[in-house]
Image (cartoon, rainbow, N blue to C red; front, side, top):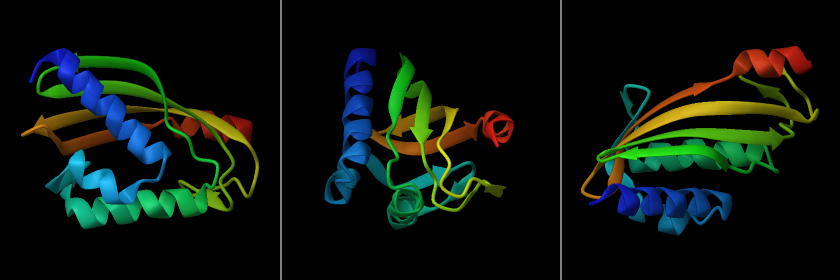
Length: 128
């Protein structure tokens, strides 16, 4: 897989998330996916994403920066959303917040096998 192919696959993955097309998620995510060092598997990963969309109904993944170096992707995602209740332990409670996520992915056989994510919690705290 080339860097361009990997970047296109990643953009397809983000489109899948934004469409909440959970049936198509297995096209992009490995069955043995790990998230921040923990093996969550495809089912656990999907459950996490579905929960995120329940708690943040207007959640939208906006790619701000994308770097591909096969088999890795580095991305900075921007969010402008309205979590319903507490988010990352913060009492957001329906207020609009903006923050970014720096996330790294490792692909295996064309699917996301490892995800390492850091969310800018300080940016949210500053808005509350």
